[in-house]
Length: 368
Ligand SMILES: Nc1nc2c(ncn2[C@@H]2O[C@H](COP(=O)(O)OP(=O)(O)OP(=O)(O)O)[C@@H](O)[C@H]2O)c(=O)[nH]1
Ligand SMILES: [Mg+2]
Ligand SMILES: [Zn+2]
Image 1 (cartoon, rainbow, N blue to C red):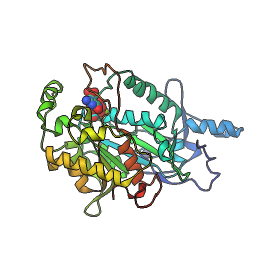
Image 2 (tube, helix red, strand yellow):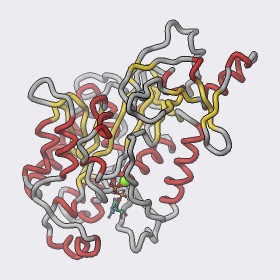
Image 3 (cartoon, protein in one colour):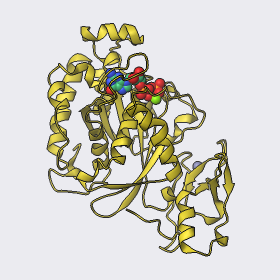
Image 4 (spheres, rainbow, N blue to C red):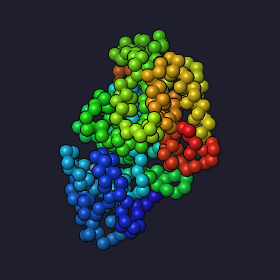
């Protein structure tokens, strides 16, 4: 478990970019807020706290107001996000109904069930109340068989959940997850400006849109989704928006063929779905799965669907199922059985240096 370091006690506060507006920000005791019972932000004055333990406890759930108000609504950053080293931001990408929210929810659920411990990573919430709300309002509902709702459109992008991850080397980093609705991800205005500071992208491929396999046609009819050879328009908008200095994008990326329960009899999907998580991170194993998923997508879906791999320097491909089955009228009657949902996240964490080095087959070599 990590502890909140006494802000100011370990040298000058670290300057970083606000994850929402991308203006520089650093921990500032004079800008602190907490949320009251009605979830309203109210100022908090730390100078009244004489007990160090009480001060730590207040800071654990406090927020800092970002000073930038230029054309953006007032926004608040959890203090632990500002006081635990260099943050990492991850965004889910894909058109509406590709399964981004279900996939992210299962990823967070598996982190909370210590699914990263096998790789030497421990976790703690960035904000205890928000984490608890995320677990109750999303994870518990989904695990009880309830389908989660479509993500509503927003006028300001903020992360839906953030965790503090401590790697094998003892270093802690905040990791924040953005999950916008598919329609919003196609916008070209300032809403998507946060993407300019993003570290990792998880592209979610929906087989119902990508694969012309005839056995998917009845479900396409039911869900009103149709097959398109032109790729996912949200992939396109997001890739176009990213800063690029050379021929390739510098972000870490994972492409996930999601809803693989719909493809469970298709080789090589059947084989990968049955694979248990590995004991340690192996770059060669990620390469093997990427090769299979690339060949599968390229063959069935065409070149537009593998564009993230072709334009991002470090990118792996994965097979996963967030729910294990398709919902029937908004319910998963047998509950959910997620498959391989953590692998894409482990891959981008490895690429971003959270899992350490590990030599030629270790985390530092993932996606090379
Ligand atoms: N078969 C199957 N269906 C899934 C899976 N994951 C999600 N779904 C279904 O896909 C639909 C959309 O899921 P969401 O997670 O809300 O999709 P989204 O990409 O977040 O959509 P927006 O919020 O509108 O952008 C729902 O009907 C889910 O039940 C999966 O692993 N397998
Ligand atoms: Mg969603
Ligand atoms: Zn800001």
